[in-house]
Image 1 (cartoon, helix red, strand yellow):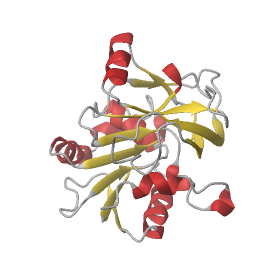
Image 2: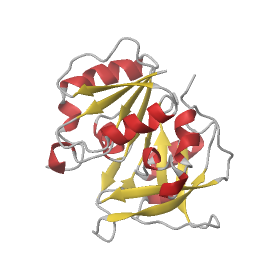
Image 3: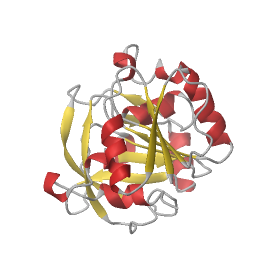
Image 4: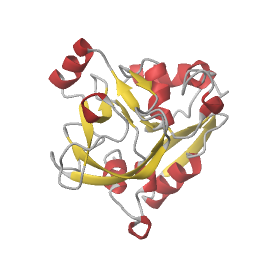
Length: 223
């Protein structure tokens, strides 16, 4: 599989993402944000974590206007798979490739720790190797992870099975670190080819570092 990882000014997780997919024996190309095309053989675009443009205005608000995002939107519109992690999730929201918006964490503090997640829906490429109700342990690190969507949009997400992951404790009880509506940690679009989540699966591929639960997620994209 050929993975294209985007890089914006301020991105800091591109090499973590590259390492994770290369550990799964996949080919990775890092693409600068000023490029107007993505490699023709791309099987998956990853918009990684970081602080694109220093999070000026708000996270992802400037990155959405980068030339490469036009190519990503066209790629997604044609059914290509796109994964946004943390700042990448924020960029996909700002680009309207995913519904909703991101606010600052409810307690206004940056949060960085391992966090348990519950798999809500595995009827998608991203979580197809996980079981519904499975509890995963994946790091989070963000100041703006407070996902918001209005009541009508939230109902649509649930009705369409677009809520993929929620925050919980080790026993599966709700444990919300940022105030996100309905404890939402990750969603997808209606076509199930664009995915976004605040946790970092690329940082959970080595048991010695605390968890390898991210492998199940990333392997879902491998053909």
